[in-house]
Image 1 (tube, rainbow over the protein chains, first blue to last red):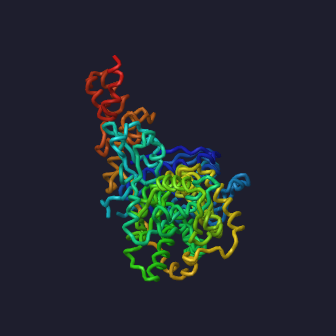
Image 2 (image 1 turned 90 degrees about the vertical axis):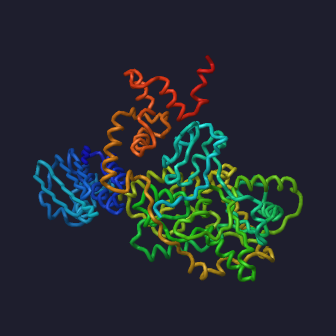
Length: 138
Length: 457
């Protein structure tokens, strides 16, 4: 099954729409609540990243009985040093974003902790592609 | 376990139900459908919140409680009364008067439920210290909330506080005190005066416990009438001193909004009214809200003061309880009934040892099928159906929303032809006889409603 959601850069009010929708879908598919939680937390972080840093993005979700695969493609500034960005507490968020309670530097580490596979490719000045997989091993 | 029935106290009286669908439209878990002109409650989705009961214009929804005369099956009959019960009466009627009438009508003792809360602040704070990984701890005080989390937020069941509610702690204390005094257990009848349907469900079918120490539940509106009638009749007579210890402010306010949360260390939050709770839990489940230590969640607006079985205005009830604080502090010490129970704190150790309850199992009502690949097939079907539905949630089909109808169709409980928009188009295309579409409507809403206009002609 495939689903697609659009993420608007800069709109914090709508951040979390894709993760809420996906949560509803996974509950209906009787996916283990613990897996649902991990998926939703990781996707929410990724969504907020697009909202906070990029101009626009697309979330593509593929669900099978074996796994849930999420691919987030954004148009944005890109990440110059991915290893640095993966460190807990590291953040390039603007003071404006921090004032809203985001930008604590937990985004990528949280995504890594909650997903089974995390791949990030990025091109500075163009955008970032985040791919996350969650295995259902039923 | 999968197929077991859940006890619900909410029942629809078929003889009174006119199938007006008001209940269906307010149910927060979409547990109600209309068929053959009557509302039907789906047991696996109902969380006993009582919204339907409060909404029904025909008084066709009842909350099944125990017969009042059942109290006489016991030699010792204790009324376990919540603090908000006093708050239902006009201000000039004292707790002493209410208390005396309760004895007159047949109870042998009166005990305030919130005595059990005297131990809870400390117990919850200890629980939080012992379980630093559980964030937030979600109070299990409101049984409708416990059920809501089981069916709609299964990933949060592990956050539920696994300690008894004041009601059960009080009942446990009373049983101990009386059996210690040599009274056989079968002679002790403990009856809870309930402000809501959920508490009855919790007594008859406790979550996380095999059985409840409470013998029965009596609806608060019923008892209010019985007591108020007597109070008026004997207004000038003397009354006995309450044989119950005076509650601390913490305990008396326990069932009100912020009654628990304000006593818990760390960052705690109180949220009342079921829709507020649902939207908060949605965010909590996504980890959009973090760093909260304790969550007090109540299904009713103004918590138990707004219980569906409370006859009084919920805001006045809250006011009265808060005024009582001042009055009690002025009350002379030493004014204690000789037969009064000891303070519940005397049995602190005994009760603390028995405070835990077992874990709460999720029972998701969201799933389309147990098997994931079947569920995926069904979701595809649901999405196909949704493409042709008008998405205006008019509920003429007998389901509360287009989404609910689509799921009902896939489950085999409904037909696409039930949608009035589909019917019209089918008629126009010659696929459906107008007589048949009238029959479909009649099967949902009953003969009466579908024939009013015909008779006028």
